Length: 136
Image: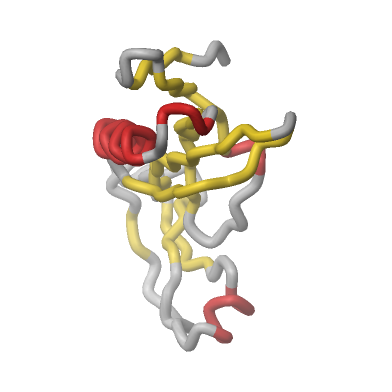
């Protein structure tokens, strides 16, 4: 039996319990010991990871094909990577890109609810990459 632990997030008003999230996936990955402590009183500390994905699309004949793509935990790094990828492509390819903000929670499967496009990038005739914020 485990020892109950007072929660620091709600100043000891609640007790923490150990929960296993994604137990089947953890067993397959041989990470059974990974667990999360949840408080019975409050939500506790969030274990959400914020990631920024960048994607380049090549427009040809009315269709968009996926080109280079990547991910980073920093929005600025994603913007720099997207800018460099768009500059490497030829000017007449009709390339454009986007940056997507995504949240990953401990033990859950990523879905489209945790994802939103925040920037769209295009290359102007002078070769500069222009970012446009997408309204959410």
